[in-house]
Amino acid sequence: MNQDKKAKNQTPGPSYAFTHTKTVHMAEPDYSQPPPGLSPDVRDRVLQRMAFIYGRDMAETYMPELERIIRIYTAHKPPGMSEREKHIDPENRFTEKDVILITYGDLLHGSEHSPLATLARFCDTYLGGAINTLHILPFFPYSSDRGFSITDFESVDPNLGSWSDIEDLEGRYQLMFDGVINHVSSKSRWFQEFLNGSPYYRDFFITYKSSDELLTEHRAVIFRPRTTDILNRFDTIDGPRYVWCTFSRDQVDLNYRNPNTLVRVVDILLTYVRRGADIIRLDAVTYLWSEPGTSCIHLDQTHEIVRIFRDILDSVAPWVALITETNVPHEENISYFGNGRDEAHMVYNFALPPLVLHTFYRGDSTMLTEWASGLAKPSPCAHFFNFLDSHDGVGLMAVRNILPADDIAYIIKRAEENGGLISYKTGPEGNEEPYEINITWYSALNSDNGDEDTAFQVRRFVASRVIPLVLQGVPAIYLHGLIGTQNDIEAVLRTDSKRDINRTVIDETSLTRSLEDPLSKISRINRELGRIIAIRVNKRAFHPCGAQHVLSISPRIFSVFRISPDGDSFILCLVNITDSTCSIDVPVGDLPVRETRWFDLISGMEYLADSGALSLSLEPYEVMWLEKLRES
Image (cartoon, rainbow, N blue to C red; front, side, top):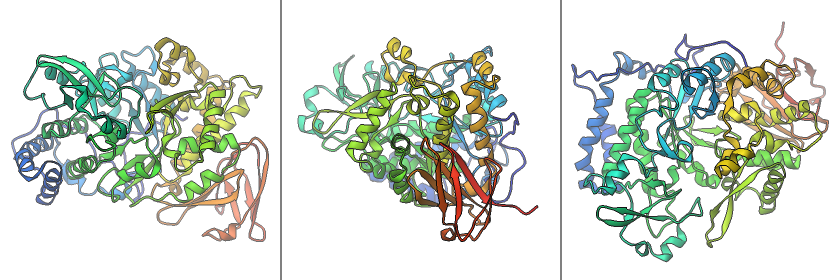
């Protein structure tokens, strides 16, 4: 993309931009001065939240231990950090500069001493100036589920590298860590201590002496993201126990009814901050609190726990952002914004990927336009995390109340024709329902068996990837979605895991060779998409707090008008989502500006509006970003 290497702590930009004040924490706490804890107001708020969850007496009992952990964290802050934090503007925590790369720590295989070092070299060489944030998927020791069944929350998987590798990356990029706090591995020390009868860990998990204790009528209303049984038998020192497992037998749910569990998790999250986390992703937070007799998702206690995390981080690490990952219907998903200032800073925009697929499959942007027109965030501090593909797949739950069932079925059919696989969950009637499409984004857009040339497929692919870049929010790109990887069916057959279709380990030498070949698919994507991202990060109109007007110009064109927060710059974004040329007249008189001369940032062409309309012709899958023509 380009090879400029800019550290995130360099000279601050314009006054509107967020100034990242984070520095490396001290390895050892400094107790020469009493470390500050929570302010009285924050302490009272956290205490009230704990009282809601556990009752007043229990909250009073556990609050001192929570405060002790917080004071230990603050004692690791270097001199001056707390003072600099006072000048952080929460409304500018994210700006147009923020573009996030999602990757496993070992997706690149190279000659460096560790996979994390190989990742660092690749990012420095090819992504500098375009990507400023790395979301490294769980890099901790694990037993299954590609990192999401963690055995040790506080160590780096030695197969990936070490904390030194993480700290090296932290010096040049903002980092997103995964807080996989819904469950732990059945091989973890915590669970092994439970099996061994340790009194401290006895209540860390949700257990029954008999599977019949979870009543049939209670099982029937539990929302299940998997088709496996909710209870799994384990033999313990005290006899057999049936343990609550939302996702798999190897992923045992934590029991937040036990205040010790909450306290330990806060300790882990603050350890992540000390180790370099700028953003913490709360994985599967939907299922944090389980209550037989309910659906066991989105319960009030879950939201209150997220608010406790937010209260603590806002108080002692105000640059750190929380993002919630909840693959559920859109209205339920955005509930994790809370009031816009008390829960997640960002939520995954899960409806976007299937809507974009629908748009390109149908060649019609109507549904995407209608949905995007109604998007609203509750405050300038709350943002959508705009993505198209991930390490899992394309979730379908978020569009259940947006797209008709026939359209969802059509998306599934088209994806399957392109080699995609479908994962299922248990529905309310006990039947299997489609939950997500497992496919790479390039293969989702382009058939492996078609006769289209590579250049045309790349145009379609890039056009789809532009949509998260222009919508209000913070864009993120999965590494395989950045380089156009195709379906890895061999991996699925080898591991019997559908999600491995999009988790191929890439040889760094082969990737570099392809990037240096101007005719290769990867090189074409790198040039075209990389140039567009480089433009985006230098345009204030794409600030996530900037205004957004989604326009209904033509069903064949997705159109968004973006305005910077201070109103002094604007960009008209147009994407032809079809395989044919489309001519349109843009009624610029209806826009909140009065411009006649326009300049396309993508092509360099100039256009003149005549009689209140801007007449344009977009080639198949062409992208235009039009702004006011600057006077020479």
